[in-house]
Length: 490
Ligand code: NAD
Image (cartoon, rainbow, N blue to C red; front, side, top):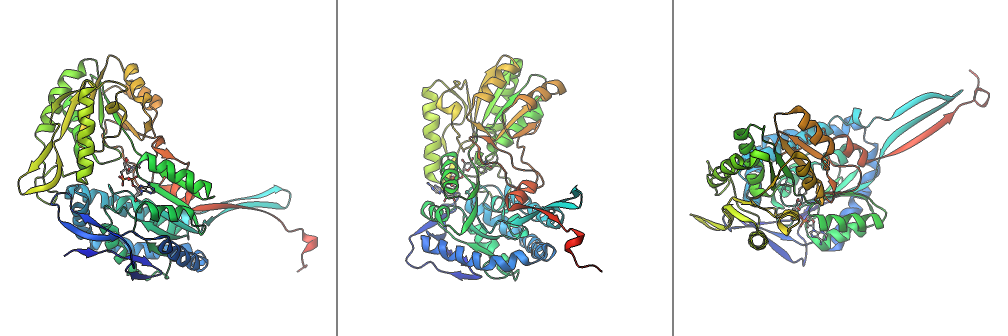
């Protein structure tokens, strides 16, 4: 059944009157799953007003009482785990196992936010001068908002939502218009929590809706995850409007393969990183740099790993890779490949659209390996966001590090080696915020920050863990003196 998506504002579901709608498509089957409304600024304002009205009471609700709602949310997400994971696969295309992994990380963030009675504590020092005490408390910021991308429909909203609420803020989520079904369903569970009305709100839409959020004076803080050009826009417009903002952007994620690595393990892990979620992960390794004699055995093994990958509908057992999100996305990827070949790259495996029997309308792309990528070419610099691994070669680790650090992005870099000294040098010198050592997707657990650098991140504090707690609170420092001769004597 095709679902008509709605907004959730002030504790009520509402149809968006007179709004243009978009089809939400299953990228594997081509089936229309839902119609998502593109909300006008008036809907954003309605949500902002509801959240602002709920804030004074919510911030006074004791942290231990606030987290009781999160414990209940965790239970509901776990009880409905299979349904939500299946929805992720249907609207996003990633295979069911990956959808379950994403959902598990979302729940892990709820777990961590339940520690808020400790995480939100301040500092106290007596006698900063004789008889004078000073302390710092963390107070919520007010109305906060998140703008999410399509590639992790559940996990990314949960990098923020549980912390924002636990810290005593009220909240508005704008999911991706391409994958809004999962959070619509999750919000139906949130509706069952019995939260005071207006504490959590959901507004659907795309760029115009986002811009209305960035300009709304009631919204005090914005978190964003998406592509770098949009991240830059969000960061500057929100900051110009005086908001606290963090914006995570795109990535390239090189991986260095040293000749002393266990090549069988390395290739398996790099293939999972490059082709998992059809390469639509901000931590997908999309460029391998082989060093010295690693080149030949790595190429042989990665060719085999790519060509044997089973492509199809992610709900079917045995499938290892799903489609990319839209046909436009597939065209963009194939266009990049074509230009890469003109620039001198060679196809080792794949390089074309793929037709999957029974799913002829799906946006499938062959798992692709390109070799001899020319440094500084478009393909070497650009985020592909598809199942494409480029391979370059370097004679020594310092040349590989130069290639890594020349890039505009700094989301993740990985090294495969059996040398502790090489690994240490690499993690010390590599310019990225997430480092993998013999790991292909160095995704921080919920109790660590998701640390992008360079053009992968605009801001200071990141999502998840203590960073999220700091982002969603403002510090207040109190210096106090109670001279005994000013006080009543007892
Ligand atoms: P996107 O930038 O197209 O969209 C992200 C969000 O921004 C959506 O909600 C969309 O409605 C909104 N948006 C799009 N264009 C806008 C505009 N012009 N003005 C205002 N808002 C706009 O990103 P996407 O395609 O949904 O997601 C994929 C991208 O996200 C990739 O680049 C990927 O690397 C990145 N990503 C980064 C991280 C990270 O942690 N760094 C994590 C996941 C995804």
